[in-house]
Length: 274
Image (tube, rainbow, N blue to C red; front, side, top):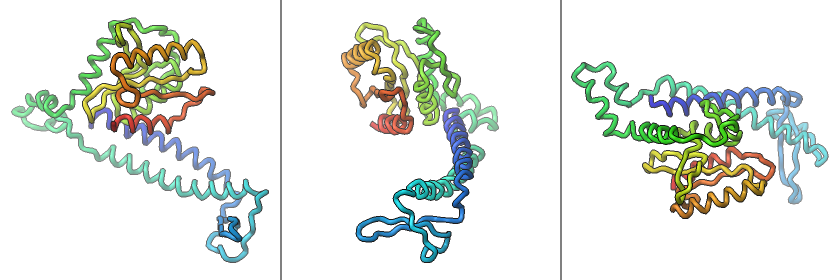
């Protein structure tokens, strides 16, 4: 199996397991009304909620007033958790099954048990079918990066899931997203932008379209000096022919420094489809 496939499946399986543990803990906290469920109907154009025993929606209904909104939300949350837990368990079983039963078509694996007559075709086959394209891309990028002294290495204090040290928690989370999606990347890559050496947060390899893209995460736009530096950098990107949301993706923290991981995940998916 290709390494990025194994990594993506493993990371998703671990995420689902953590999520399952959290949901089960919350589900136990909502056990007070375990035998009850919600019923709702419209009366005079107003939606009214009732609590009733499971399987008995027509009798012994108790009206839930607007003052008891927390009770209604607890019953709604419990309904969600019961179904989400079952789906999460199914997902974990499926991911484990895929990981255990997946047959790699990487030439090295395919000809592993073949006779000597076929062994020398491995490298040529890998090149023909593109298996080494992304590997060679990253190898060359890392070799180029090694020629430069990384600026402010003391600020590399946050560690992503694959061990990469980053300058912010948000960047570490983005690396985990890229790995989960199987997207090859190089973090903190030195690049000449209109004759000036800059360090894009990420360069990534788009396997589907055989192209190189850039991701810049702007996490401190509330800071004036940071904002001015990033504005200058964006101008250099544009002078070099980069176009936002075409070959340059800009992601952000909000004004309070909070990152929305699902939103950025959707942005990356859309970005890779362009």
